[in-house]
Length: 271
Image (cartoon, rainbow, N blue to C red; front, side):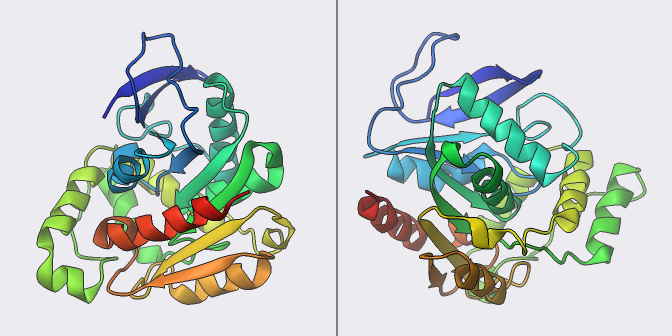
């Protein structure tokens, strides 16, 4: 999987793509099929999409960035809001000369994708919204735990939280993989992302989204329960919901084949 850096709004921004490598200052060829921009979840990074871009890259041009302060991108703190992340993604697309793309986001990344579609509509051909919501309800105890980590009062928690019972019982390797992604990003950024998530509220705006939209929910998601996805599908005209069994908040790694099949079908139907 080729990777590159791009200078975007003062940040050295790391990203993953599919296709031939290019010289450092040369933008990769993104002309195969649909250009797909993947936006990761809070405290995560672009590599978390590897099940998706490895598969979809056979026919399309996926690209997955590390947002500022995440993964290998520069910075050690989160941007202040979901809106700031959306503006950053718009600047990233400008830097890579991507006029518009199918934008797919999970959790916080889904909120960023929705805000991008609302305030930068020309950038978005279609939306994939995975395990996300127009309004998050993160437990105060969870946010405080990560605040304590940033202050050196406790170590990073490594738990089964967010995974389906089937994954917990049968696929511990997926959970360990998730823990590996977790430690790629500074805890200060994860805490800041959680604050940004709790502050965003797009419920009164999502009805204005007029892009083809696929919504994917894990049936066992207790972070952004399926009811939140059902609210989105009731508000976004023409959207549809795919609910995936035996998957929780990490549906993209718990059931990648089902997620990829849903995305492939969605992409094939775009005009």
